Image 1 (cartoon, rainbow, N blue to C red):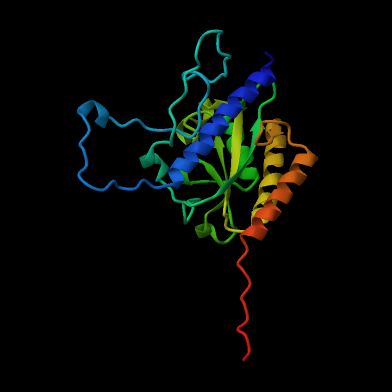
Image 2: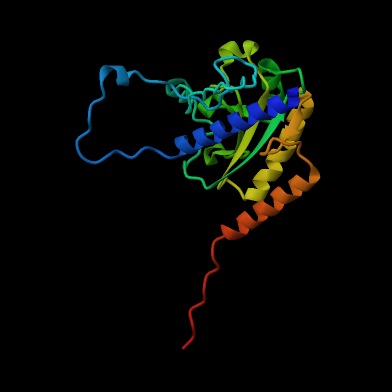
Amino acid sequence: MSDMALLRIGILVAGVLLIAAIFLFGRPKRLAQGKRKEPADAERQRREPVLGGDLEGDGDSVAPAVEGEQVSQPELGLPDVEAANASDLGKRPSQDFDKIVSLYVAARAGQVLRGEDIVVAAEKTGLVFGYMNVFHRLVEGHPERGPIFSMASIMKPGSFDMATIRELETPAIAFFLTLPAPMTALDAWEKMLPTVQRMGELLDGVVLDDSRNALGRQRIAHIRDDLRAYDRQHQAPPLTKSPRW
């Protein structure tokens, strides 16, 4: 199996985990009615969730499964809540969303994306570090409206720890646009696409679509059409005029 095939497998798994984690975070838990059963002491130990993860263990590389051996699934969820809440910059006013559009910048075969390079490239493209310890593109002059889109690592925990950023190596980074956004879906896409493409240039990486294939013109046109349709479906209905008697 080629290095590119292994990379796509790793990005596929991490992408599913990333989107699932966002979904879990975006849906606050409801308190169960009635008497709550207290967990046993062993169950009270908190397991911190993550945004993303690799295929096996805690390693930084994606390894193929040996024939007859099952690949263990990494823990799913979000980064440490206490650290993530250090900044609300980039937090969505509402955690409800109904669509996610994602892109990736992947390292070329035999290479990795390094933490320091990612931070420098993010600053050059106008991304800011904030909520959940990931990067966001905000509405200029209106940060309170939440992120237009965000960027995370595909390696668990998905967030960026600035204290150890020099040690970070990841095969790819993920960009995700959650809808509804603080602007129309198409306008948000037109903000995200050039940013991702520029990040790819700065990091000497490859831009991939949500299916982990190289992003081409045909795919870009299809996404634009899809987001135009989304905007039409979510426009406010026109006001009906009262009949004249």
